[in-house]
Structure formats: structure tokens, C-alpha cells
Length: 553
Image (cartoon, rainbow, N blue to C red; front, side, top):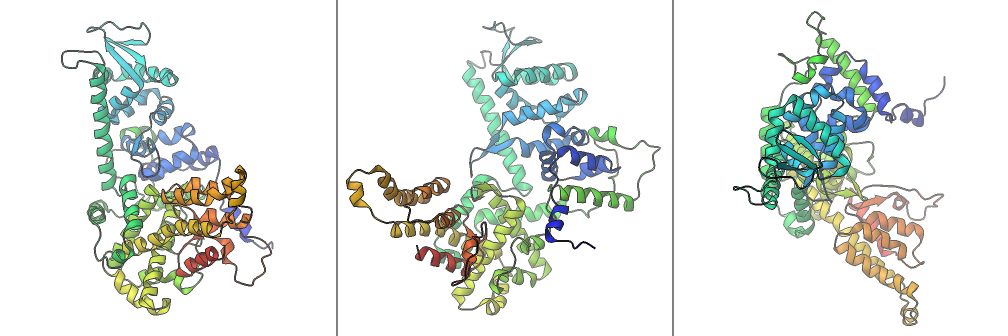
């Protein structure tokens, strides 16, 4: 019998990369419609992204109007940069319209379900409207709808916009005319110019954005601005203040309380059995005919389990979604007793208290996904949980060091600390501040160790001028949180900095510094090869190794 290797196991569970193959695998399930209907918006959006929006027709045909609205609420809004408020992406909206228009009969009902205000905001970005009963259009172009002349603002989308407007004109004329009236730029007694109309739609978009932030906060989402403010506070507060902290900050307390209330109201025992009553309108076509036998609950569970396995294999959601599983992920193996200090203490808490700490971990994970990057990339749900666990453990190790105790001796005291607020939040803030000090330490070490070539600079050798300036420019960029640019400047460091040293520095000079695997080597050991990659920093031993590396530059 052939021995199964670790590589074989990894290949057998490798994520599917073909959207059409994923569709083929799930399409045969008799419970697909009910399963899709029960998917949370984030999971459904991830499924659509995995398949590809343009190839997701079979999935979109099964979603309810409310599901579509929730998915678009995720898909259509993006921040211009880290920590920036999310704004409506009109190009992404038009991608969705191009996909949804394939089902001509359902396009109008889907658009109406999104709400008139939202459609007006989108149309105001895409078209100009003139009421011909009030003014004569200056241009003969565009299209005529009732008494309105409609002109494009964005030419590349115009042909799809025309199809969308004509579809609404056929299937929902009253809705369309109300929307066009609100987009009418014609000067009138009540509205003197186009600028005033533009201000009206801008205010409407601002209101929708604010309502969206409030609604998402109520459902557990931390907006990018709030996340950035939290992280900045953790980074800049005096460490002594964090050590003595005994309460949540106001925003954290408010968020966690709202989350507690939401979960108390929203909790329902999970069941894959179809809901009672009529299916949503968009599911009607996919629902079984009345004379078809309904599947038993056991059959439904079996079908759901099979679909779960397919989506898990495709990477639509993590293989394990339990918070405790995330805390002990194989991606962060235990290296020493101190590397599991936090998870050990959490495992010994009473279930009700442990639940409160899990809520804190979920909150902190949302903050990292919304307000942080790691090695210049956005953070996934799984990675956010691992970063929060590692950073919280780092904070716990720092506390243990302050108490003068090792991991074994600090466990009981840490458990008592976790029995009350601010629990894991304080540990994370302490650990995060330690992480944020690393890029500055790197810049200081570079300046301290960079060879001085002032004599060459005096001879106007601009090559060396760049080398001399680089360490100080790196420090400036790091202090301005411009880590990507600082990483690029490490390439300009003098030749005395070896390639492996620069690789380590690039990993450490980051918004979320990580531990380069190359530093794992023990002193005096012989390196046969340089181990690439990194892991998350989780112990004071990690910090000590980083400091030793910097001291040795």
C-alpha cells in the first residue's frame, strides 16, 4: 500500500480554482436552493467571488431579494486606502448590472428591492436628466423616456445603463419616472441650478453611507475609521496607561454591548430544514413543486454537509470556524510554554466568561480586517484571528515578565485577569504597542550601523549620496507610517547590508511586523539553507531575538 504523505494530504484538500468546476459540483444537490438561501451574506459574497461574478448566474437565480441587497452592501463599497471611509464603487455596481440583466424579467424587481434612494444615488453618478417640459436640451443625444431626456456621464457604461433604463421603463415605469425626477438637473423655481441638485444627491449618498455604517455596526462590523482610531490609540497610548487599564474605552464598550444585545435577539438553533411559510419571491422558481416529496431533516443535513465540504475545499470558508480552533491553528504551532499562555488561560475560564472573551477576540479580528494590513496585504478572516491570538499572547507574556513570573507561574494570575474586562482587549493593546515599536527600532539600528561615506559625498558621488540618505529617509517614512515606501528604500542601503539582512528588515518594517523564519536558527547552528517566510510574533522570546538581530547589525 502506498504511504500517504503530507504533500498528498495537502493536494487532496487543495482549494478548487475553477469557478465552473465549483458550480458543477454544487449544482447536483437537491437542497442547493435552500442551502444558498441560508448562507450568510459574507459567505455568499465569498462564494460569488470564488466562482466569479459573471459566472454566478445559477447562484444568483436562487438568492432572495434581501440576500442580494446584503451581498451588494458588501461588494459595492470600498475604501480608497487603509482606514479610509468606504464609498460606493459605481464601476462595481455596473458589473453587477451587466450580470443581473441576463435575467430580463427579474432585473426590475431586483433593482426595486435595493430601494429608490440607492438607485437614485447610482443613477446620479451615471446620467444627466433634463425635463423637456421645463427646458430644451442643449444636445440632441441621449435617449428619451417620457418627458425626460437622459444623457450619459460615463460613456463606457452607457450601453448597459440604456438597457437598465429601458427594462425599468417596461416593467416598473412609475419607479423609473420617480427616480428620473429626482435626478433631473433642469433649473426650476425651487432649484436654481445644477450645483444645487448635485448637492442634494451628494447629501443623499452621505446619508446612505452613514445608515450603512450604522447598520453594519449593529451586525458586528467595525468600520475602517473606527478600526484605525482604535489601533492608533493602542499604538500611541503610554504603555503604563495600558498596563493600568481596568475598563474598555467608550467605543469598545458601546460596540460590545450592542453586539451582546444583537446576539441575544438573533440567536436561533441551527437547522438546515426549510423554513416554514412561502419561500422568498426569487426562490419560487427553484422550490419543489407541491406534489414533490419534501426531504427529511436527516436528508437535508446530509445534503448540507456535502455542500459544506465542497465550499470548504474551495476555500469559501475556513476548514474550522470555531474561535477556539482559530486560537490553536496549525499555522501557529506551539514553540514554548509561553506561546500558548493566552489559550491555556482562556481554556480554563467558565463558559459564560469565555464567551465574553470570544466576543472580544471577534471584535479585535474585525478591527484588524478593517484597519490593518500585514506585509502590505489586506487581512483575511482566518489570518486576523491568528494575528489577534498571537498579539494578545504577546501582551500576556509582557505582563508575565512584569510580574516576574514564567509562563507556568503566570497562568493562574492571567486567568484571574481574564475573568473581567477589559480582558483580551487590554492584552492585545499591549502586544500591539510592542509590535508597533519594531519598525522604529529597525530604522534606528540602520542609522546606527550604516557606514558613513561623507568623504565620498564631498566629491559629489551621487550614488553614495543615495546610500547615506537612505537610512534617514527610512526613519522619516516609518514615523509617517509609510511602511511600503520604507521597505522599497531598503534596496538603497549600502552594500555592507547583506541580502538576507535586508529581507529580514523588510519583514519587520511593516504595519504589522512579523517574525522572519530565518531568525529561528539557534546561535552556533549551521544553516544549510535560508528558510523563507514569516510567522506572527507572539512571545517576548520573539521580541528578544528581533532585538538581538538589530543589535548585531
